[in-house]
Length: 246
Image 1 (cartoon, rainbow, N blue to C red):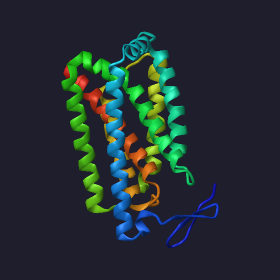
Image 2 (image 1 turned 180 degrees about the vertical axis):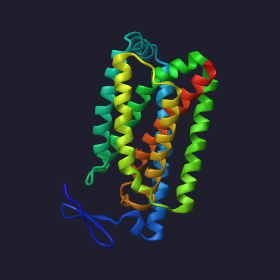
Image 3 (image 1 turned 30 degrees about the vertical axis):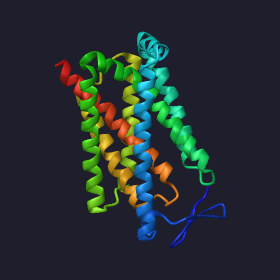
Image 4 (image 1 turned 90 degrees about the vertical axis):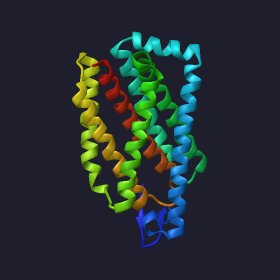
C-alpha cells in the first residue's frame, strides 16, 4: 500500500481521496470535524445501548460469570480475541474505497468493546452499584473534554507522541499478559499510569483529526477517538473501584 501526497490531495491507487484536514478549506475541515465527533457520539450511545441490552440478557450475564469463574486464562482468551477483532475492525474502518466497510469496522469495534467491558462493569456494579459507573463515566467525559479543548485551543500537532505511545502500549500489554499468566496484581500505580497513557492517546488522536486525517476519514477518526475514550473509561473505572474498596 502506497500513499502519495501533493499540496492539496491524497491519492490511493489512482483514486483522488481528497485533502487532509490541515490542507482543506475551512468549510471542509469544519464539516469533517463535525462528522467525526457526531460519529463518536453515536458510537458512545451505541456502546451504552448494547451494554443495557447485554445486562438485560440472562444468557449474556451467565456467560460473563462463566468467564470470571474460568479465572485468568479465560480472561486472557477474551482479551486475545478482542485484540484480533480490534485489528480487523480498524482495517475495515480505514478502507479507502468502501464506506459500508468503514461503518462495519466501527460497528464491530463498538460491539467488541461492549462485550469486553461486561465483566468489569459487572464487578463494578457489585462493588459500588450504578453510582460508581456513573461517576467513572462523568469523570472520563470531563477528562476527554479537557484534553480535547487543549488541542483545539492550541492547535498543536501531537504526532510526535506516536513512537512513545506505541512503545508504552507494547510494554503495557506485556505486563497485562504476564499478570494474567503469573497471577500477580499490577496495582494502583499501573492504573494511574494507564490513565495518563490513555490521555496521551486522546491528545494524539485529536491532533490527528486536526492535522493528518483526510476529510473523508471521519469514520476511522471516530473509531480512534472512541478507542481512546474506552481505554480511559476502563482505567478511570478501575481507579474509582480501587478507591471505593479502600
